[in-house]
Length: 90
Image (cartoon, rainbow, N blue to C red; front, side, top):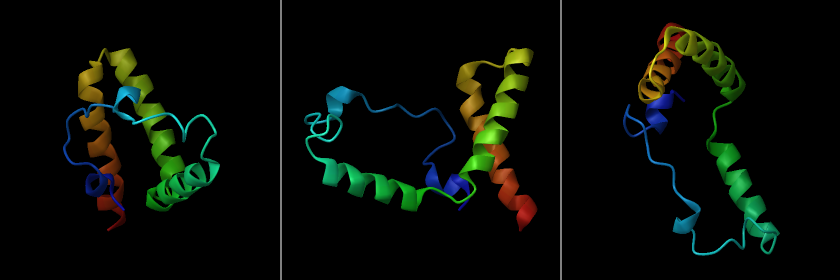
């Protein structure tokens, strides 16, 4: 599945803080069955080619750092690069 199908926008998204969680029972081991279900659900949503996404991101990051690309610009650029993988395959 192309990353654009997963992302809502091409702009940087806020990362949910731990304060948004009702409690830490999943993270601290008090609900291992729930943690396992959540892990399985996330794995089912992640694309098979996630490893290649990570390799591309690592390569692009090195270029962007060398070129002085602002961090705020990198996420939309990465999304565009990953979507290009699917355009090339189509």
